Image (cartoon, rainbow, N blue to C red; front, side, top):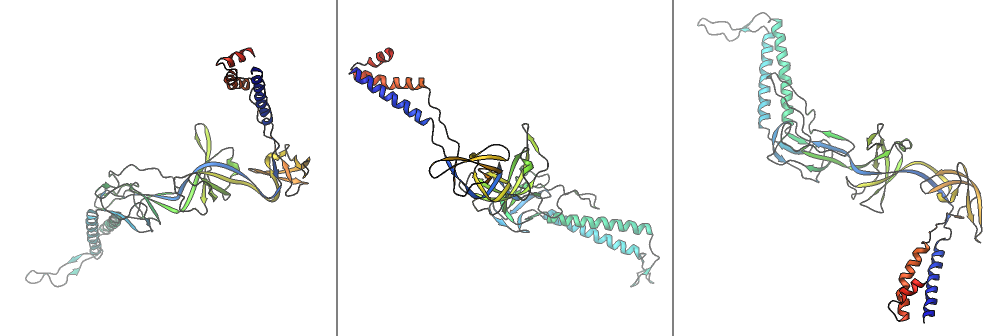
Length: 419
């Protein structure tokens, strides 16, 4: 019985050893000669962003009286988005217009030399006065200066009144609203802190000419600067991908080059893109220098949204209508190398080729090759486990079995020690 157990153990160990030996060397892998396009690409990670992002706010302080849109709503240029109380702005405009009218009347009167009403017998004025000599030039110049200042005050007041209404500067989609009705917002208001925008273009303010201090002949109102954090408008009709390319690779990337974009959120989908811009100045993070690159998606679907992470493959070189083989099939350095061709009978023969563009997965070659021929790729070797490991595993596996065969619980251990 013990002899039979030893024979079984020897057979199992031999099987394990021969199995390991067989797996140590796999047969060569083969590929095929094809004709087509070979492309070299540079890869980078990026993020989808809207091509244009507008951070909108009111150019003056006020209380929000109405919000006319909601998040996700599409709007058109010039559409009213929100309003703040306009009572004070209307009153200021009325005062400015009245002041301008008075200043213009005074200038006209002084230019005509003024009027001196003729006195009647009872001391009352006649129906029409008589003009005196033209006024003093210095007085007229002062009147003109007042008119100019009051005209500027009217323009400022009209702009302030316009600034109480927030309008869309372009077509787009409302992606964020940070305020609410009844909240004080605008320059000096308590609107939330502005958030950064990832878009390729950012614009502040919702009215033409908004912001900037303005003086008036009344002695002084200042509209301040627009607080661009009340609402965010994005043009989602055009989406970009921003990525950072290492300084060693940036020289191969040029504006207008094609690219493909893969999104982590949409596996299996590749989107066509074009390099829109390449930054001329790099940024350094942790000692690594990279250059920002922006790509425009050619035909984004509705499933693509800003903020999605992406993998970008930018085409840096391309050759068309060439013989191509898997890059690992080419041996040699420089311009000349060899490719091993396997015949239908399984005979391998080296063929000398001129090495062309080395693409991402294939290489262009020029030589005595034909489309459809089989080429040999490097073998994949698997190192067998150490013999000691096999022996220990076999001992642990077989020890109990041998003991069972011998009918004694400790028999396997004794046999292992004896062996």
